[in-house]
Amino acid sequence: MDSDWSVTSLDGHEGVALVTVDLRNPSPVDRGVRVRNRLDGPVLPPRRAGVPDPGWDETGFEGIVAADGRRTLGYACPAPVERPPVTVVDEGRADGMESDPAAAAVRDLGDPRPPSDAIPGSTAVDDGRDESGEPTDPNAVDGDPVPPAVESWLAAVEDRIGRGERLTNGSVEATTAALEADDAAAVTVLDAQLSADAAALEAVAERVASLADRVAAVDVPVEALRRLS
Image (cartoon, rainbow, N blue to C red; front, side, top):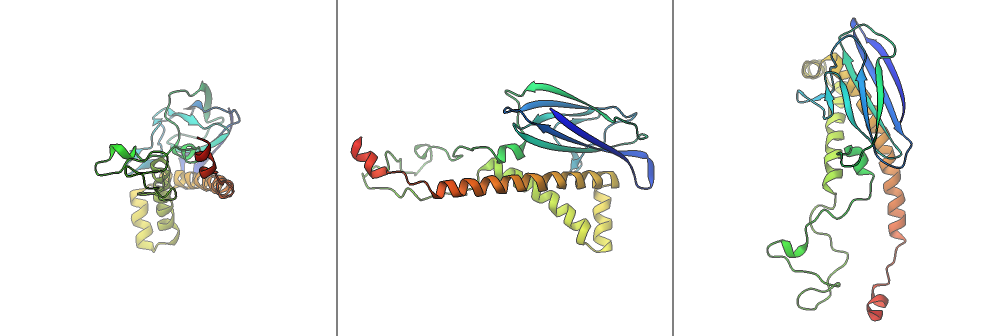
């Protein structure tokens, strides 16, 4: 596990440190990581609706960095700046642990829809034909084509972008209201999260473009295979 960190004082608040940790996993498997705060104070983690993001407690963060992936963390701490601000512990292969939604978004995801014969009123499909023996449309897609894991991650990113937009483009009143909901330390953490989101979105966009090009070139010889079966 490779890592870099930075630590600064919050503008106008010398007694509050802002810490950013950049984690990189060059191995081909997901790895668990524990980031322990070394500063003389409790961790003030990133929050959503007042609730700490998953993996955080007052001592630091525990979670997963995806295979060949990267994860950026940020938090505040009511303590003087010291270096190094954190200890990073690689906890090894992350078998059985829940992965990061951003990592899930760039993995090969299976079809999230239940089998058709498990849905009341649906028509089972076998070898491209329905119960009456009529051919079905192999190009038809029922429901929302976005897998739930991807939708969940995109919704979280959209929420953070919306908070950032309100601070960037809002009126004085709107910005003041946003700062009341997210204190100055949380705003700095939000900035670090948005930087990580930007990197993740770029990686996902490249992966999606590559897969789209590949799937467009695929032409499965269904009829020829059916004649051979």
